[in-house]
Image 1 (spheres, helix red, strand yellow):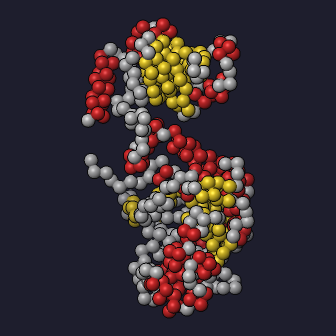
Image 2 (image 1 turned 30 degrees about the vertical axis):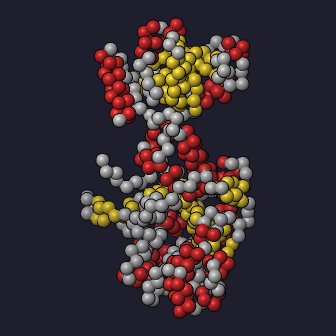
Image 3 (image 1 turned 90 degrees about the horizontal axis):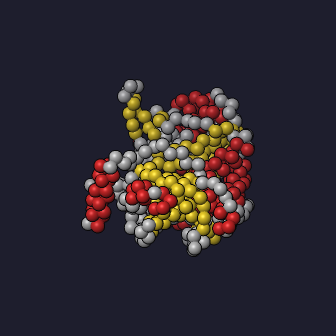
Length: 493
């Protein structure tokens, strides 16, 4: 009811301004300064030094607070750089402009210019000589003392979240900086940034359920990509020996604090490298980002101290299960015992399900959330790694790792399978899984196999979840906190 009354009053005020031929949304102001540029230049000066500066400064931004004293008022203006106070006096701006200013509201976007001084409370302030309305806010901002705290509203109305919660804006500034740093890191190591299709004739490069769409002109079904992997490896085959892509992927999966159906990845491939080379490169990358963003290799995440100092432990999948659960090595090697233990844990194990898939399910249930400090889990079963190179000593395993931090997968990498015959066999294995009801199993891709038949050099590739990386370095508990517009369930009007 209170919001409705405020909205009614605002609309009445707007109609009054229109009747006076006041332009509510002009676009004729050039803004030369920001709050941060003014503060950085003058925040250390006293009033005597400020008085000697014969220069006017102009900023534009949103009114976040108004303190009215009759013939004068203080307004707090917020722009992309922060907040700065302006002092609006009738004798300085004139009767007509001051009368107009009295119709301004918190939330309006204005321009002010004037000299800089300090108030009696020592606050740096613009003594306004000019003031202009740039955009009238029809709707009031959330109540100033409580701000916007409802999580659902914050995600649905991110514009309000950014206005009233400056710390949220800092998260996304940090996100942008992390992506810039990733590009710098890759380019300094001679990786070429490329772009691959987001719409693909078949969903490949990962084990996941895709989104489907349809191209009317071509009369064909397409998929939003679940990964760029198979296209990037085509480029490796073509002689582009180090490539990377910062890409959007789409997976038709559930939503959680660590999952969003649309997410951002850094994916890169390096010819003449192994998964062991990429473990060293990953450590180097995280150290680089940590030092640039925090200045330290020790960060706080959700009340836990995370130490990024390399080298990080390298533990095989089976060793991790033995170390972090009650299972023993003999159980992992005996299919019958393995099935019984998995079912005792409450896992849904189908008849005939492969040991590799069962072991993976046990790992996800019993081990993942215990991997708090950075840890490389290596040697995944072939059954869950359809694109990974077999291990030379244990061919039932692959030369693959996943990086875990705070119980969550941050990166996935492996030495690439470049044997076309083995790759065809793996795809056939996946097709059998699809026929058995696994909607996430990989499809057959004859064109990719044909690519391998031309000869792909020995290669290692990796995907790093940028959203999860940003969560880590901004101490954000949910992936929705680091995605500007996360997918939300439709809201009933």
